[in-house]
Amino acid sequence: MSTPHWFDQGSLVLASNNKGKVAEFEKLFEQLKLPVEIIPQGRLNIPDAIEDGLSFIENAIIKARHASKISGKPAMADDSGICVPVLGGAPGIYSARYAGEHGDDAANNAKLLNDLLPFRKNGEVIEGMFVCVLALVTHAEDPLPQIFQGIWHGEILEAPRGENGFGYDPLFWLPELQVSSAELSKEDKNKISHRGQAIQLFRESLQK
Image (tube, rainbow, N blue to C red; front, side, top):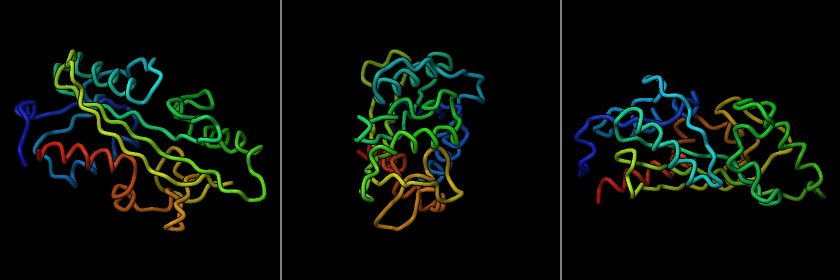
């Protein structure tokens, strides 16, 4: 595996204070055996950035630049969420605060189920997709952020299933596996999830 010049600094800031997300990233980076230390921004007392973009890509770049500017280190940010086509792509970039309170998984899940009630006709499947966009900046004003995107297709259940994961995992049904995302082990989820796909693309970029 070749190592780009920014690896010379020996560490990379992960621009997230979401505990579930940070835990998934730490597991993924451990599996990839990357020769770089991943530092969650909370360890450096870096607050969350103001996410005022209108897309996953914009918000990921905003968060990465914010963490890089404060830390003086290369930074990677993840912006992710669930998109439901029949809702015009909602919750989308507002997934974490869909019900109003940031990070209230139960309220967000309940609102999504309620919003989908008018579309549930004759047992028809409601499609959804988890989206993850990773943005990597080598410094705060990097003019060429690297973007890695993963999309995980599934269906939205009528009621939560499973105890694992976080966010909308209990509502995300994988018909080919006949389980919800919240019924997968961390290892199995990481192999196929939107975040796992994006991290794999990042890994492949290091080998070019």
